[in-house]
Image (cartoon, rainbow, N blue to C red; front, side):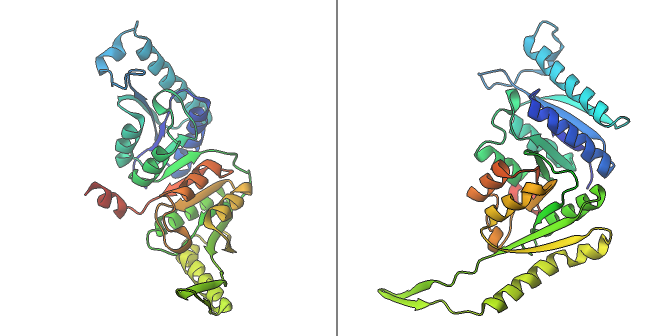
Length: 299
């Protein structure tokens, strides 16, 4: 990871919780913290000029300054000695965060907001940020369980490798176990082969389970050697992906998922599964994309 840890703030309680978490992440990773507030004219959806921030009588400028000052002070209280920079950036929150992510190592946001970050994690906006940021995105939601594991959604794909690497690093820095969850489906009902005809779906369930165990083992084996201090708890689930991840998050301090995947994690951040994880996980969620994804998105 390179660049500062970035946190988006709007003065809401959720964004201040994000500041605490971002300060902790910056300390763990040995990075500085950048606090950003996105400013637009209320209701009109029009950015105001930087010069208006210098007007003492401008209520918007005063609010922006108070918001950023409060966040910076909170960050310094949370992690004394941490290098903290701040900026009020003109523009829409999502556009600002996406642009800022290009020079950040991690973006941290709260699960609910107001002002410039209203609706940040509601509906398609959440999917967009998690799918298009140029670095991992950490969503502060739910309640982290002290002493709980870091839960990883492991699918064994190339795209998911970045999430595995991130999860191992977080587990190592937190002194936590890593619970690697991999899902598979064991459906033995009939399938239609021709109109009006049913035939049993025949396969070796034990062989299928063994193959999925191999996929899970390979997904974490390389990093297990790199982080020998991390205790890995493989968890093979015959279940739907979103239910398995949400359940696993109940006693976790962090849930880590990739932005793309295969098998049980196909389309993780492209629809109902993303909504379920980002809105219903019981602990903070980190969404990690493979670096080359950013180039694909810019084409």
